[in-house]
Amino acid sequence: MNRNKSIPWRKARTYLPHRWIIVFLSFLAPGCSRQYYLAESESLTRRENTVFVDAEKVSPVNRIFFNQKYSLDSLFREDDDEFSRILRLRNWISKAINISDFEGKYPGEGHADRILDLAAGGQGFHCEHYMIVQNAIMNSHGYVTRCLGVGPGVRGGPDVHHGTNEIWSNTYGKWFVSDAKYDHHFEKNGIPLSALEIRDEYLKNRGADILMIKGPGRQAAQSIRLLNRQGERYDRPAESFVQSYTWLSWERSNNRYTGWPSNRNDISHGNYYSDTFSIRNTWIREGKKHWAYDTPYMHLVDSRTALEWTPNVISSAVTLNGAVAKVRLESETPGFLRYEMNRDGLGWKPAGDYMEIRVRGQETRLSFRSVNVFEVTGPEHEVAIRRKSGKNTALPAQKSHSASKQYP
Image 1: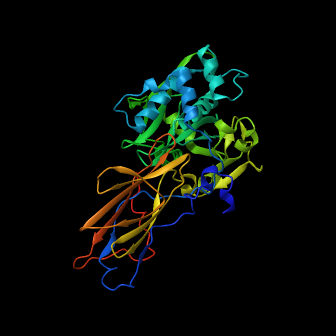
Image 2: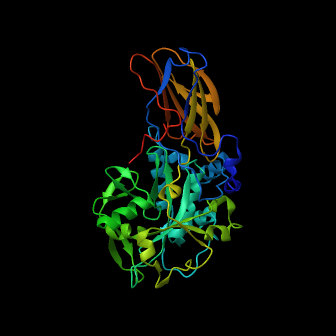
Image 3: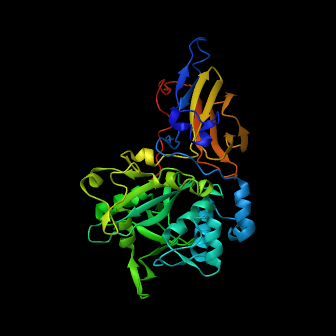
């Protein structure tokens, strides 16, 4: 499709247009082809990227650069899972840069390493700089990260704009807001929330059911102490932070780090969430109607699934022919390296995007995952094939099989 041409990772053979798992049962050999069927199993639904363009062209070289300069690998503990590593990196960024919200002009020219070097010398920065640095460091560790602008947008205030990030969590199978400036995110029932989910909670009951979570220890916080323009300390309550997600826009081009500075104009284009609330109201930014209204830079998107597409998530097409399963895998994995398969829990081994597998016994369970060049693994995709006995019912032909699992 033409819209895919500008996204580097889609040029690989692996990344074909989205399909559901479809089962084709051959009846050419009576009795033979009907002995197995594809059973129900849970896998995260893959959602295609249709509204974002470009990607960070990162490689392990970028990670080596940041690690050699800032010793980031020393932050991790042996028992850390992926989510813990992300929180440790965010915590380091938060500590490495001092907040300074009210300066007229800031140095660094939008380069993550220059911002960090200046911060080490005592220069303070505001939210956009934290967003820039977190985007660079997380993507350079293989964690898909994007930039967004948010705001409460209230006429007469509050109406301050805020820059932050969303990170794709393979652990939870979802996007979540990660704010490096304040070293926090938001959770509901222990699940980190995306920008859209935070917005839902604010519009429902001003965020009464969610928690603001700080630091790698994931401690709940009621407020954060900050300095106002007069240099006076005050406690900003959690509800105020939640309100910032009333209005949402994502940078349409996802290559702020590796495309800078030639992509200045591209990243000014935003995907703005459009629903009944946003149609009936106006986003006010610092006393005025948001600058992007009535310009080509505002791209209205009313599809939540389009905004929350699923990197690293696999879908599969399975054809059963007797005791042979023909499996084709698809995903959109930035920095794709390989697929891996785990058969019946015997361990992970490299796999191609197409394979023919002889099934045996009463059940064969296949797990698949994508792996990127940083050796970061995506969510597991499950396929279960069982031998028929008595009244077994196979999945009907052309029925979705990968849409059975939805993470909170």
